[in-house]
Length: 207
Image (cartoon, rainbow, N blue to C red):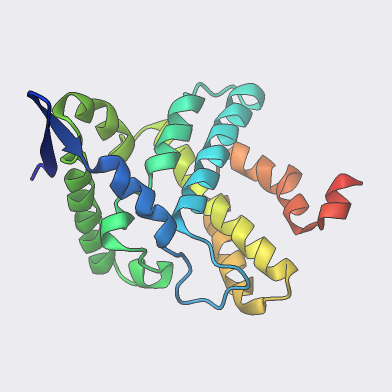
């Protein structure tokens, strides 16, 4: 269903698209709903971080491991990777991956939500945004974004643990196992070379 309304202006008829107004609502959706947080993280913050991490993972892979990923495309897929959650809300990981039936059902819900968002765009824009909202799941760029998503979760765990919140200790272990199992050299390098700094104070980072 196309969710586009219009208003008259002068002698013309201007069509209004709700797409970007809907995307702006990512800031109202909080993550880690089942966990005690020292600081809440919203979907908008997470999407920015995943975009940044996906870009650098592609850069690392291309420069140090002979990869050929499109770093810019990785960044943009990362930016939009959770956009359907504007309509579905954030389903906690323990629930989403509790069993295959729930996981498969949620994939269908996400696809429906993604299609609804696409329908809010002018028709001539949809092909461009479809490759961001519904990327090729067999591509290297998609694999990199999945790793960046897990890496963002790892960073959240490290930051919470640095504040003494042991609630995130099991999540950190589980997320690292999952990330290592992807066998993505760029992600492994980030864990070793960049992740430890997230536990430092501002003074320690400046020193």
